[in-house]
Image (tube, rainbow, N blue to C red):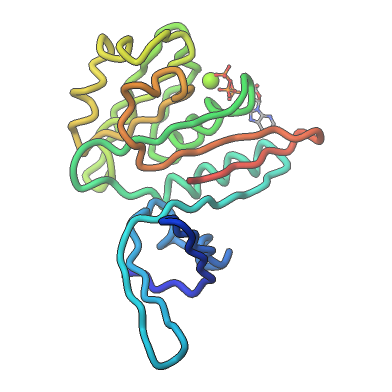
Length: 202
Ligand SMILES: Nc1ncnc2c1ncn2[C@@H]1O[C@H](COP(=O)(O)OP(=O)(O)OP(=O)(O)O)[C@@H](O)[C@H]1O
Ligand SMILES: [Mg+2]
C-alpha cells in the first residue's frame, strides 16, 4: 500500500489527486497504477477509499545521453505484471526518439545486438538471458504502418500478450487503439524547440 499526501478535489463523479513530485518520482510510483488512498478529513473523521488513479510524471532531458539514461532508469524500475505481458506504449511524432528509448531499454536489459527501428519488419523479438532476468523476451513493435488494430493479429500479438515473461514496447499505439489492451505504462515523448525532450509517464 502506498500512502500518499496530496490535495484532492472531487466533482460530479470525478476525482483528481495531485501527488507531490517527490512521491511520483520515487520507485514506488513508477509502474504502479493501483494505489490505496487514505484521506484525512477535518481531523476527527477519516475518509478512506481505494481505486485506480492515473497520474502523469514528466521529465525533461536535454541531450541524447540524458534521454538514454532516463530510459535506463525506467528499465531498472520496471517490474513485470503478475499475469500477462508488460505492455509499454510509446507515443510521439516521427523522429522524437521512440526507437532510441527502446534501444536504451533493450541495452539495459542485456540485449547486445543492435536494436533498429522495426518499421519495415513491424516486429522484432529479442531473447533476454540470465536466471535473474525480469523478462525472457523483449518484443519491439512499430505499428506506424498498420492500418487498423486487426493488423496486429498476424504478429501473434494476442499470444505474446498472454505471457508474463514478455516485455512489449509498442511505437505508434494510436494506430491500433481499437484493439490495444490497457498498457502497463504509457510513455509520451515531445520534442521542444531547443531539441530537449519531455518524457511523460502515465
Ligand atoms: N532525446 C534525443 N535527443 C537528441 N536526438 C535524439 C533523441 N532521441 C532520438 N534522437 C535522434 O533522433 C533520430 C530519430 O530517433 P528515433 O528513430 O528514435 O525516433 P522515433 O520516434 O522512433 O521515430 P519514428 O516515428 O520514425 O519511428 C535518431 O537519429 C536519434 O539518434
Ligand atoms: Mg521508431
